[in-house]
Length: 174
Image (cartoon, rainbow, N blue to C red):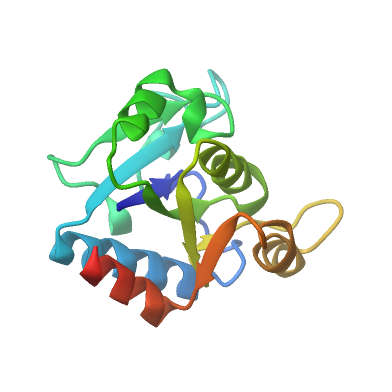
């Protein structure tokens, strides 16, 4: 199993996220449990290009301090919503014997959604844990409705949705 941490970057980890404190606490907790259990933690960060505040060299591009990778953990960069848009990441994941991937991070309705669907299409067993993806309000729905819509409806048939306790147990049993 791999714990995939998506777009937990300084420009995005913000108190305006839905259920911010719970989201950050649970994300930190899962990363800690994965490390404790010897589950590989892989990071992907988004590069939105020059002038976006979310590109190489920008402070906002860096991974948030609370969830910073260790020196031995892999960090990939993507330029489209799905992590699988990065060829190196895609090839790395396809080489994995264990096809289980637990996905956490940002944003529910963009990069998490695209990554979950891409992983499912490639034959991965995709796992999400409650409260470990979040987003901001948008023009159509508030953040809470958006998170609930994706977690409880859109992904219903492509992911295994688990509680936080179940996620910890899955990481321990790797």
